[in-house]
Length: 249
Image (cartoon, rainbow, N blue to C red; front, side, top):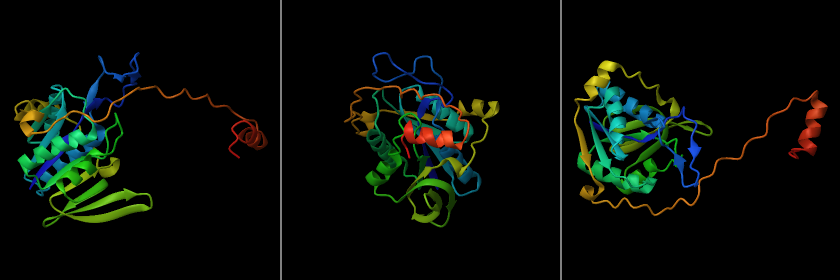
């Protein structure tokens, strides 16, 4: 079984992002970039399936600029066998990414596609669902456990009421939640090995996909500053402020 793991290059989660002066977007100049944390969990899940003998090959795929090769090399250092980059400088929205991934899926013919439930830069939480719709495949989102059976995937997913277990007929799409696993530490020897693994670079034109976005960002603003908290002397003072100042009771 072949598993395809989709990854995205985003601003590192430790970075305090700043909005550009013209409010056209987020300033990423000289900012540390890394793999989307949820996608890193997805790659780890795919590699573990291979280590368990449930998968024969793990292919990492990314859509974005040439710098996304670094993200794919990280995925290969975790354990992916090879990488595929759909290189474009266009600002990709979830639908365009889903269309590009569909083209790669049709080329690679994996039995399972796994990706993060959302990216931490736009928090759209749409790509996996859109990809499943475009392919007409079953999907399981917010996965906290995955078990592969005979032509099926049994996925435990987190819902508001607790845990839900669903069984999918392969091929299928799964999006990874935070508690699916803890990604392994990438060692220097594995980083060196990843440099020798094959990485195929393609273009949207070669895949027959138009990456032009149908959405336009009008303005990006920083959230309003929160007022500092205060201490109150007793419960009566707390109730008074909640009633007369916050007006929540």
